[in-house]
Length: 461
Image: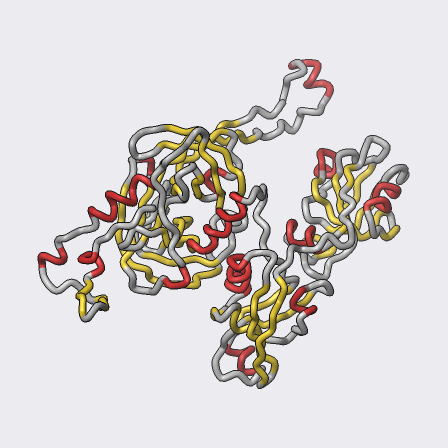
């Protein structure tokens, strides 16, 4: 455990056994610096070098027999590209568990971790989530490493002094200082990440991703993940994933999970705007309005209804669906959470079970074979687990494309397309799709839903 015992850095004055936080009062206090904190915390922050192999583009004439005969069988074959990724990570335990960002290491084929004392370790991702932009790595043959303690990020306050430690631009480990400038930030993103963040004005630059945001005790309060910028450099608005969510990822990784399991609410909600609050007779716009509920939702089971407003989860205020999901994710699957529900002028506390997304009905995931006209197409029946995995609308049912395969992709199908009809015949399960594509005649018409919009895809055989 790393904890810098640095009372003067807290600018505290002992008064009858208590301490009072105050601003520095003299030049000597200002000149003290953060050196003792950095000296103890920095060894737990590592540099990460990741190698990612990406497939090159396919030559449009790749399948043309003329060019194959003329130039040889290798003509037009996509050549793989090797992309190197540079980032940071934080050691969370002495036996080699490290946290970083998913966008740094999530798709890497080779990962090398270098500590501040120049030791190198091979590592692999054992648990990751692109949506949360978190990856937990395990270092090979690591033991007795320095690590950072996780602070309860719910107790972090705006105005606290903070340090960001990482490896920006590959120049080596650096430290920048600032304050916590905002909490409960949502709507920011890195790649496909959507979430709930701590905001800081400590400089965060490319390469800082996955690095540590620590307090003046040397405790980890967040993992640096992104910046808000127009120039590509730090403009004083950086975002970090709260330590409480990192703690849940670490717990699941140590439990043997190979993917992150978040409690399923089975609801769609929207931010409470001033207009919505006025229409509901609320003086202050607070909470999340439930706009849709799945039939199997644990919220529906607990008695919540469309139109209800959720204002708190386990006593913590929530003001967006992302914030509500964060609170439930931190609580973890298997227990319960208490939701404060507002219906009209009535307020009530409701206990809700924290469950995994149900596999009801069975997904029956199927990959079509050569007996069909679209071999390699992988499809699944829609259930809550599939809805969660592919980001579908709660109301969607039927059959969804999990992987279009080479022929399906050429026909225009995409991951997440919901199949409704094939040549005028309604499809409700994977076997219906397979039967419709075994001998469809000279042409195929597929009616699909993509992002809530209806499309017709036509192709000749």
